[in-house]
Every structure is written in structure tokens, then in C-alpha cells.
Amino acid sequence: MLTYLIIIVVLALLFDFINGFHDTANAIATSISTRALSPRVAIIMAATLNFVGAMVSSKVAKTVGGSIANPAKIENGVEIVIAALLAAIIWNLLTWYLSIPSSSSHTLLGALAGAVIAGAGVHAVNWDGFTQIIIILLLSPIIAFGLGYLIMVLIKYIVIWSGNTSRSKLNRMFRTLQIISAGLLSYSHGGNDAQKAMGIIVFGLVAAGVQTDLNVPLWVKIAAALAMGLGTSIGGWRIIKTVSGKIVKIEPINGFASDLTSSIVIQFSTFIGKPLSTTHVISSAIIGTGSVLRFHDVQWGTVGRMLITWIITIPISIALAFSIYFVLFRLIF
Image (cartoon, rainbow, N blue to C red; front, side, top):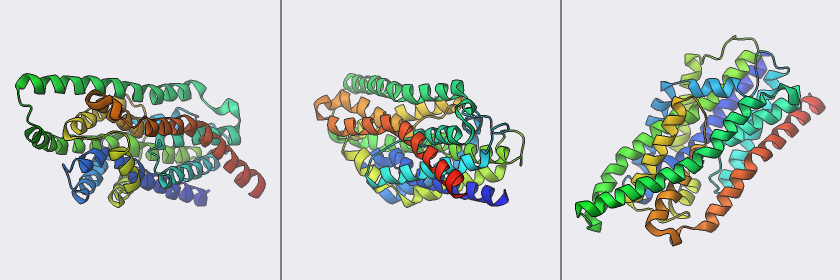
């Protein structure tokens, strides 16, 4: 059992590390593309603020650790976590290699559900809790798109009303504002995304009988925060290129609006203890704000490719985790 627990912690931190360079790239993509921040400064800032954000709360971790299944009552809980993490890591690496900004959240939660079905049966899944999470995952990008569109319209009218329409002055002003918004977004990202790795570790600890509640131990918080911060420091240049240039041309004004929109949506979700896809939120905010400035310039082909990936991620993750569990713990071990 101790060996399995060590494997869970290592895999969870590896997933968190990959999440750092896979998802956190989104948080700094706009500020890098507009040259508000240099890549080196942006990555250092994002890594630091991701760590800080990850240490602040544990509401999302408790949701991940207990909403899909009850780790205290489930059969084969430790093996289930291992299969789920392996599936999530494989899908994350594949989409990173293909430069597709898919969702680590969709991957992990879908993989956990698939592994639970394989290891304990369909009845072991808390379908009410799983459905609530899926609803948040589906609604948050729509909300981010709509809110981003409204914020961009508001900023546009404020700029026109002020009479300050000089492009060079606007770019200077919003590049400065982007430094603040990118920092806020990095902090928000850490507060939601790092908690998913914390939650899955806690799931394993409860399933193994090491602890009886879903409270996140301090060592788990620190380890997950460090793993995400380290992953962020490596950078995610493949994803950055897609988000910053292949969706719509980003200027300082809509870069700031996108970061602000994403931060609001992510912070609210974290406050109510619900995991969401920061990738989906940030990408949708960029599409929403970009649509206000130049709707016809949005690369809808890229958007469509992203949407397809978003749709297939959960079912693929469920199937992949189910298969991994079956092969590892039914055929091999």
C-alpha cells in the first residue's frame, strides 16, 4: 500500500508539473504576444503567483476529492487513482505535443470517473456530483465568452468617450494594465488548477485509510504548488503560440480585457469551490474580446479544432482510464 501511495503522489505531482507548462501558458500568452512582458519575466511572474494562488484555498481540492466518488467507501480506491492519473498525463502530453490547448480539468475528472467505473462499477460514481462539475465545465466558457464580449464593448466605449483614441497611447496604457491583469490571472489559475492535484492526492490518502476527511495536508499544498510553479517556469511555448496568435490577433486592449474576464470567472468558481477549465475560460475570453474588435479576423478554423478537442476530451479520458485500469489491475497485477 505504501508503494502505491508513493506512486500516487509522484504521478499527481507529475500531472501538476505538466499542467504548469500545459495550462499556465494560457495565463501569460496574451501579455507575451503584445510584448507587455518579456517571456522570461512573464514566466517568472506566473510561476510565483501560481504558487501563491495554490496555497490560499482548498475548496476546489475537496470538490475533486469527494464529488465524483466517496474515497472512504470505494473499492480499489488507490488503484483507481493511479489509473486516472496515468490517463490524464497521457492525454495532456498528447494534446501538448499537438499544440492544442485542451483542458487538464476535463482530462483529470473524466479519467477519475472512468477509473472508478473500471475499479468499482458504475454504481460507485456519484453521478449527481459528477453532473454538477460537468455543468460548470460547460457553462464557464460560455460565460467567459459573453462576459469578455461585454467588457470589451464597455472598454471600447470608455476609450471613445474619453477621446483618447491614439493607438500608440492606448497600447502603452493597456500594456501597463496587462502586467497587472496577467499577474491576477496567474494567481487565479494557481488557486483553481493546482487544487485538482491536491484533491486527487487526498482521494488516494482517504482511500488508503491514511486520513479520514478531505482536508488538504500542508505538505500536499506545498508539494502541489511547487510542482505547478516549476512546470510554469519551464514554459509552454507550443500552447502559447496557439493561444496568442492562432485564435485572433491580440492587442494590448483586448489582451487586458481577456485577462480580466478570465480572472473574474476563475475567481468566482474558486470561491464557490468548483473546478473549471482555465484553458477553456481563457480561450473563450480571448474569442469574446477579439470578436468585438475584428470578428471576421477570428481564426474560426482553429476555434473549431479546439472545440472538437474540448468535446472529445472527457469521453476519451473516461475510456483511456478504464482501459488502463483493466490492463494494469485486471490483466497484469
